[in-house]
Structure formats: C-alpha cells, structure tokens
Amino acid sequence: MSMNLITVLYLVASVCFIQALKGLSHPTTSRRGNLFGMIGMGLAVITTIGLMYKLSAEADSPGIGYVILGLLLGGTAGSIMAKRVEMTKMPELVAFMHSMIGLAAVFIAIAAVVEPQSLGIVATLGDAIPAGNRLELFLGAAIGAVTFSGSVIAFGKLSGKYKFRLFQGAPVSFSGQHKLNLIVGIAILVLGLYFTFTGSLTAFVLLLILAFIIGVLIIIPIGGADMPVVVSMLNSYSGWAAAGIGFSLNNSMLIIAGSLVGSSGAILSYIMCKAMNRSFFNVILGGFGAEADAGPAAGSKEQRPVKSGSSDDAAFLLTNADTVVIVPGYGLAVARAQHALMELAEKLTHRGVTVKYAIHPVAGRMPGHMNVLLAEAEVPYEQVFEMEDINSEFGQTDVVLVLGANDVVNPAAKNDPKSPIAGMPILEAYKAKTVIVNKRSMASGYAGLDNELFYLDKTMMVFGDAKKVIEDMVKAVE
Image (cartoon, rainbow, N blue to C red; front, side, top):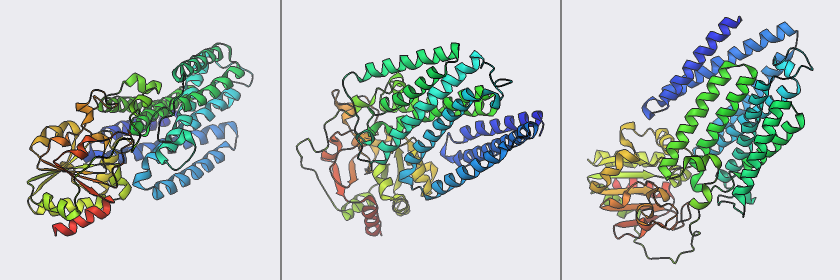
C-alpha cells in the first residue's frame, strides 16, 4: 500500500466522519450518520493496518501481529459489551469508552517518550525528541490522563452501585478544593513546559501522576444531576487527547478524528450548559457541580399532601383530552417502559388525541438519552419536540404526562430565585390544564430538590413502576 493511497483513504474516512456528525445532528438522519461513522472508522482501521504492515515489512519486524491481536481482543470485548448493555446502562458504557481512549493516549505517549525511534519521531535511539513533539506529547498525555481518571469517577457515579464515597451520586467537596485544583493545574503546566524544553523523563512521569489526580478532583464535586454535561465534556477531552497524540505520531487520521470529536464535544457541552444555566468555563474547570446539587437532601422537607390517583383515573383524563404532551425521564428508562408508552400513544392517537413528546436537553444521564430511548421504541420522529419548540404549547395543552422526570419540570427554576437550579430552562409542564406525574415515590430528583409541580391543584400523582402503570393505562384505554 503506497503512502499516496493511504493519504487518500484517510481523506475519505475523514469525509465519512464529517458526514457522520452531520447525520447525527437530527433523529431522522441519525441512522445514516451512524452508518457513515462505521464506514469511516472501518476504512481508517483497515488503512492503518495496511500502513502498519508496510512499516513492519520495511523494518523486518513482527509487530503487525501484536496490532492484529490487540484489534481482535478489543473488538471482541467491545462487541460483547455493546450487545449486552441495556439502555439504562448506556451512559456508563460511554464513560467507560472515554476512559479507554484517555488511557490509550497515555500509553502511546509513554511509548513515544521511552522509544521515540520506534514511532518514527527520531531517527535512532538516543536522539533527542524535538521540542515540538515533546509539547504534543505533554498535552496528549495530560489530557488523556485527566480523561481516564475523570471518566472512571463518572462511571462510578452513573452506575450508582459502588459504596466508595467518590463514586456516590452526591458531590464530594472539601475546604480549599478549588485552590488545590488550581495548584495541581499550575504544577502540571510547569512540569509540562519543563519536559518540553528539557525532555526530563522525571517531569513527564510527575505530570502524568498529577494529571490522573486532577481528573478525579474535577469530577468528584459534580453531582448526578449534572452527569449529562460531564459525559459531553469528557467526550470532548477524549477527542483532544487523541488529536494531541496524532500530532506526535504524524497521523493525519487521528488528528482529524480527534479534532472532530473534541470540537463537537465542546460545542455540545456549551449547549448543555445553556440548557442547565451553567457557566461553560466552570464546566471545563470542573467546579460547577457542588452548587447545583446543594439543595436539601431527599426527604428533608416536611411531607405535604398531594393528589393521587390510579392508572384508570389517568387513562380517563388522557382519553378525554384533545392534546397530550408526554415528558419522558430517566425513570422511564429504568423501568424499560418505552415500548408500553408507544402502545399507549398509538391508542390515544387512534381515539383522535394529538400526542407529542417533549425532550429536555439534559433528560436522562447522557446527551440525547431520551431521544435514543424513544427511537428504540420506534416513536415517530415528527412527534418528538425539543424544549425550545414545545414550551410555547404547554399553555394550550390539555394533559401533560410526566414519566420519571423531575428536575427538568421543576417550576422552582423559574419561580424561586434562591433555588440551586434558578435560571435553569425547564419544560414548562406546570402551564398545562392538567398534569399527571408517574413516580415510584415522592423522593426528590438528582438535584435533591422538592418539586413544586407535584403539589399543584392541577397535578395528579400516579405512584408505581412506570412500565406497570403505563400497561394498566393501556388496558384502561382499551
């Protein structure tokens, strides 16, 4: 395989990645976007194998065998994980993948620093690594280390099944936390620059250790309610880590792919921050979660009376409505009730009821979680609306059905300037004529706040597992 052909194939793969991002920008084109992404990555992998084979043949080295072995092991593990993962566990899988990208960047950087001649950075063993390459290695390794350790913490917080405090959904904060982060960050920068100008292996090792540490420090103060922003932020970090290593290896494909992931992740993080009334720079620095989750703990407020009803009562209200807006949340995903919900919506539609779905940008545990959940149940795309498109319609809506959502419909964001979520854009379900809320209990959401929506005179609570409740509604509608 000639170098000209390799360059052309990398260019084609890059075009596929760009088309993938374009396709993933809307639900109706997401399948096509995924297809472009798979084709681009497959082409990039095959081309890289061809390049490795060419280099191994020229150097008379059996290294290509190890590459293929690694591909087989990693590909097999990835396929098994993707096949077994449940929709509710998808955020954890994404966090795990981010951690692997970061760790790969760190390992490549270590290999490049220890044996630069093997990667073509220098001609022979003993030659000094150029300062430009050392800067690229410093940035790629540091960002990769932050991505790895930060993603491990995010995985634990998303999983919620580990007792270790750092993996709890609640933020972990302590006195002088931000000052410590600043000191560690400055130390990493100083060590990185020292390594850039001197090539000191000791400085490189120390900056790696500190980068792993700060990755933990910037994620532990972030609570569960902010996890969608964390996921998109770590996605951006993983892209920049890959791009930095791509410069060191002089691999155009890695540079382009990493830059696309890094920039798109940064843009997504900015969008998510606007949706949660967060400062983008605070997100990048990892110091935004503690204030957001500073609300009272679940159950700390005195219990107030609420109106409650049965699935039959809810079905009666739904069938007698002209317009219904459904607000899905993480509770719907946990109950795996999306298919039952689709059946309910179809029966209501056949009765002449106009049914729409309202999606908040941070509903669920990762960006687009609810969109993917509804797509899995084959909900028509034309019935799914984003927050900015549906909010103006709540005032004319007969019934809003809230399923497992909490913070994204909390009126305190608009009505209480002292609330930790004050200013956060919400789905304005409280403006509807009637609100039906399905929850397992009156427990607060991830932000730890009481929801005034549940206590309105127009609101009826239907307690129970979302799937069971919706299936009972379907029977009642029939």
